[in-house]
Image (tube, rainbow, N blue to C red):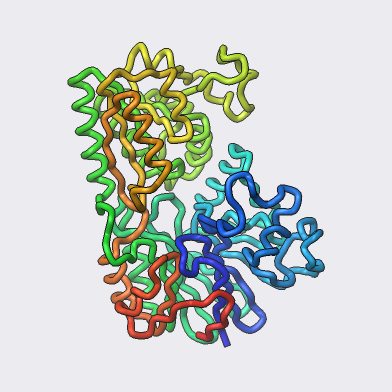
Length: 453
């Protein structure tokens, strides 16, 4: 009998870890890190020890204590003995850290299945981040339309639209019937037809069960539901106003949201400005142009793109100041001094954790800041308070323009109605109880409990 066990993504947004078992086949659907993992035990500088991360997380049951799951080199001081892998595969939906980040703990003999685009994202993150290590694995890449057999299971990945390219949902055929796993998806993005194709296939499968994300399933919607086209219109209005006033435009967005990067790229071209990105984004783009399906600009060849270099070490922009992967784009260099002298030539990305660059850029009073990310969940959000302190200090005009990577409550309810599964398991949500109003056979998962299909 096929069964499910949930070890993450329960009563929380992110951290999906779902174990599907059928006969001798045991596969994981995602293996991500929760957003607030261990917040009851770790805070500030009190964090798991770098030489015993697995043991420190297992101490508080923050990872599933299962035999044949973890890499041998990480099991010292955990109280667990190593044994050969007892799991057949991990199937990843997309490259956001709350779906992939805990891969680094797994036995390298367990194969990892990802979309081709997802693998490119993961490689770029490992190259440019000092904190990302997915470990050594045998990666097996797929595209929409392929079918993958693991024991008695047949998994069919189908693309969906999300705030990162290369996202997939799965239709899975088991001995206990068919199962749909949505991953994360939206219906209002520039590739909404991909989500439509997934939902159509999911409906045709007449699934016995569906695992559905529910990020925006909330009693009251706190956020605007803009489409990517509406975000573009908003950015173009800001550009037009800034051009009239002769002011600078600074923006920030999710670092791997390539739809949003394309939006700012189009807006910059429309107002005759160069899009200025950071070296990490440039490196990511350079990797992603390898995938012709993504249709992204080449940061080494496209004259509409420049790369912002902050002062490091010598403060003289010497090549040796920068990592090897950063040096690839130095012929595209733009500095704070150049932005300060010619503010109307650029549309410049400055992320929250790089706000100190504003001290060097010194945008004129009345310049514009476009915050192209989700609104804070509440008024007590400390980062939001700090951000607005910076904006007030530099007299920057604030614009919030964002298209969510997730379905609204209404869109999700409609999608569930279309698929009409026998059972409904909500994950990736803080409000699982709301699914009982949507589906009469909604099952609210409990961590570690076995659910037969």
